Image (cartoon, rainbow, N blue to C red; front, side):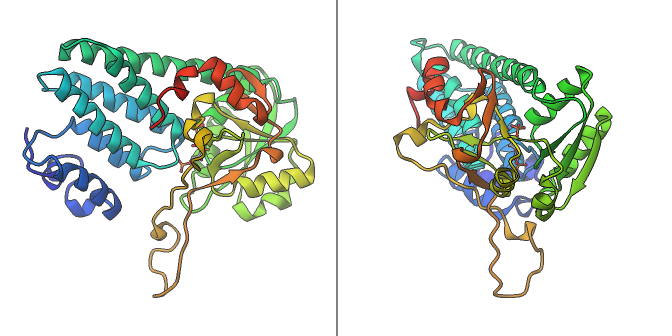
Amino acid sequence: MWFENFSDWCVSSSCKTEGDVSPKVYTRFADKRHQHSLVKPLSESIYTAATNIQRLEVQGARNVAIAAIKAMQDLARETETKNRQAFLSELLEAKAILFSSRETEPLMRNAVRWITNRVERSASAKVQELAKIVSSASQQFLEMLEGSKERIAEIGARRVRNDSVIFTHCHSSTVTHLLKRAKLDGTSFEVICTESRPVFQGRITAKELLDLGVKTTLIVDSAARFLMNSADLVFVGADAITSEGNVLNKIGTSMIALAAHEARTPFYVVSELLKFDPETVYGDYEKIEERDSDEVWRSPPKSLIIKNPAFDVTRRNFIHGIICEEGILSPHAVTEVMHRKYPWVFEQPG
Ligand code: RUB
């Protein structure tokens, strides 16, 4: 089906009306669409994935990357472009839309770049062959992610001692997979998790852990320091790792790191290395996404200023180690290991 503009696409897709899309999403993606009015839109999957990511229906860096990769696979299947140039433009448009759906997600950006770079490098003029490259590159990236997740769980589970108490924040699928592995290895432990205001991803963690049969205690975020002395170690996920070895994760993570430092509780980041942002090597700061204020207070008093940053930066001095697919690394070693293991990440940032 052909659409005149984004609002038509919206009406015919999972968004029932324009108003059903947050104004931010609408403006962002509508601007893109209007540059291309009267052309068939990209695969609907790209807009749907971008909208779901932006609305937090897809949560956590790994799931965001997987949703973007799957949308690229759909695009390759559904494309109606007839030549190399048109196919490349379609891919670049998809890349721009996916990148703008969340600012603090280098894993997603690395995944999409991995796919588009492979297509750009091929000399083929046939759309069918280029589409095959998108599918196989996507599959390779998904396999890399899966392999890393298993390796991280294997390594990290060795740090969980019998009868220990683990502290965690927000919901990281990488952390919960590690804890699942520790449980399957027969280790007995309990977990304290924060509720993670404002949208309570800690409840997802709590439910998953209870389903695994792990004794779990949920606390309000501001009780983190109060309870830190009861924990033996902290595991948190990551959204981004910078060239200096600093880590961005859910807002509140850096406060937890400070509390852990004060209590001398080892603080580990559990993350695949592909959350590294190559642009930080060249001086760019990782952007911190600011989310809608109504997540914090739906009907606040007029003129009240509400700030709702989604992530914060934990400096490397507070990080005991990064548990990744290459082992437990000092944050100082990250850039060097990235150069060795994933040199392609540095080839074409942007
Ligand atoms: C989730 C969050 C997670 C990281 C890592 O924030 O901060 O700790 O994304 O998750 P949000 P994973 O809910 O706002 O996306 O280990 O699953 O990649």
